[in-house]
Image (cartoon, rainbow, N blue to C red; front, side):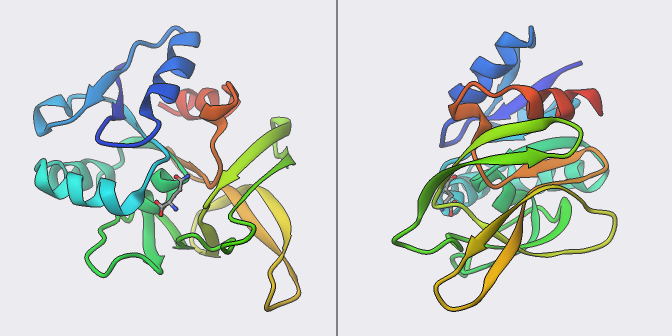
Length: 195
Ligand code: GLN
């Protein structure tokens, strides 16, 4: 099983460290020649920058083709944004892969509270510490998408809402937080199990 980690920008080395802990030695994906993999991770970072680099490296179209024909993927934070069907509050030229049927709002948790930490209940996994850093809000989930965990969040302009924070559809898993920053490997295991 060959696993790739998109290594254009962001915290990809933290994902490599978690995979190494699980005895997986991933390929760093930087050019279309690196795409001979069975599954890939898109790290946290800045989705607008990763989007620009995907286009300038020539990776965007071949990767989109692979993802749309069923390649396994796991995206955290910016990675969730890039795997989403559509993005609200992105840059006008920002691309996403449409690999999972969710709509996300970039930086949707707001400015003052842009970063927070909480403990989640994750279906089939148990309690999990989660670090949210300028995280996306999942605004809509459609089709086959399962929600494995949600947070109850008070937005300044509305009543409390349940916001999905881990979603899965087939072989595609996304989280709006960063398990890779706290040495959490259980979502990486879930991702690897489906390949
Ligand atoms: N706000 C960032 C973006 O738009 C995501 C932040 C993160 O990955 N921690 O891509």
